[in-house]
Length: 258
Image: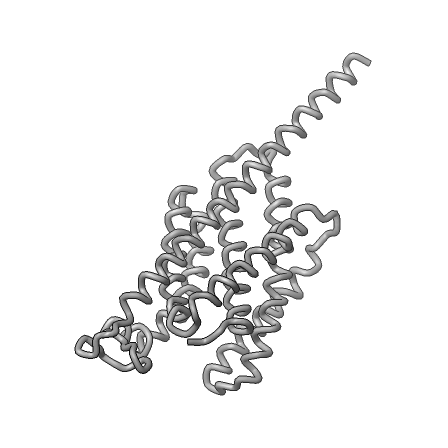
């Protein structure tokens, strides 16, 4: 009996340690993601400020009645370079995924923050297209929705793994539709893409949160802190992409244009 109690006590201590480790892991995931979001929006705001001027003598192109693109703004928004900037985050994600095993946890974190800055460059045009008030409003709506969906993914007892294949297939189809619509320029297709995009990334938010939690629980016994550190960075990347994409699609649906 004493031996059984000892085993039971040891199991309880181990479970408590795993719970504590899981909380620390998720805090790192959300903290890293939040810093990445801050870098993205600061970079986007700063770059959009450099791209626009009210001085006609310093303008490379006219944007509106009282706003003009600087030469820098013209190069990133109106020249062929805009296509490179548009697809740079996608290429960055694939490269990051391929290189993660060769990077240290600290190196992976630096690469993630660099990616966040590149994403800021890619989405900086939102400050030219939409009003500042609507950007803030949509960001807050996205933050509330994301928090609720992520909390659901973390706490639910329902296995969401079955959603994964369906959501990934939907995401691939969405990317193809977005590329096709670049040439079609159909407002109806753009609206449908935005609605479907919100639904897909809402589902991915819950799915990815549960996946991050389950991955930690499966690997916590290994004690490999380097691996767990990189897993936290990749988890932050997944949730960061869910948030950014949900925000961008909601902005297309709800944002007030300049």
